[in-house]
Length: 86
Image 1 (cartoon, rainbow, N blue to C red):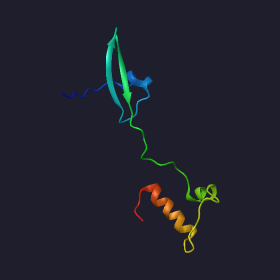
Image 2: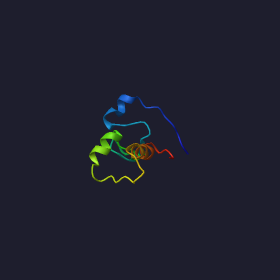
Image 3: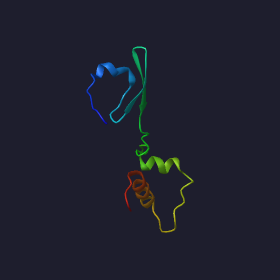
Image 4: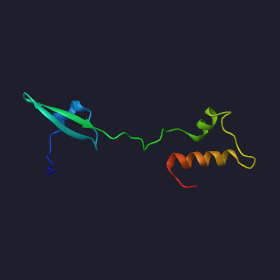
């Protein structure tokens, strides 16, 4: 069985809750609840940055093919960053 209840936000302010978090009441200790908070790791969001900065920081480690340009490498980077199919 699943129940949904509304709790005023000020009662949970100190828990640093975000939308999508899951609260699990582990036990009732005296007159307080022991609560477990689960938050999904946000691995779907790649680190933000600019492709130009990446190319400068990767200086010497990026090997371009004979017919590949810097723009090709940049577009490949963006395709991976935003999950686009090239």
